[in-house]
Image 1 (cartoon, rainbow, N blue to C red):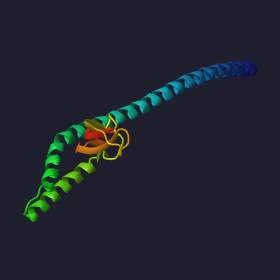
Image 2 (cartoon, helix red, strand yellow):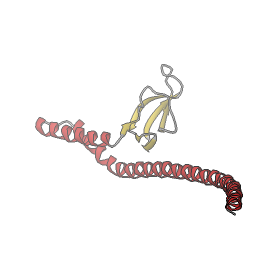
Image 3 (cartoon, rainbow, N blue to C red):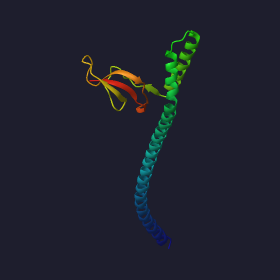
Image 4 (cartoon, helix red, strand yellow):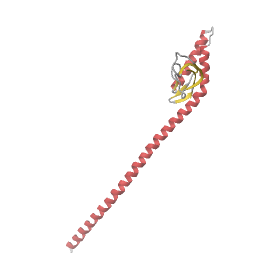
Length: 166
């Protein structure tokens, strides 16, 4: 009897081993599916993070551009006041200092001046207000600037108003 029990137990162990192998195969397959789902979910999450960061930076640049564009007329007036002739040199120096400080603050926000005189006209950056014929200048060369233009990064805040030759 003892031997029959041992044989039955051995057969049970063998059948359990077969079942364990089947479960192992099934669990490997399930593991692969779960692993694949995890990788896809992780990739989607990384894309979401990148997209929201890009949208956030875009929104920041848009808001900064709106604020800066509403302040630019003040900057223009300060620059005009600093160029005005006056006998009070202290007053004129004070205006120049305020204009410089104002310009420095806008520069820290990422604003840069659009280059104009001597450059080729670019409708993405410049607004032509007049045209002159001048044989000493190149085709579509900017000869004079009426109003400065500015951009933040690649976004144009205000186009430069220019006179274009030829």
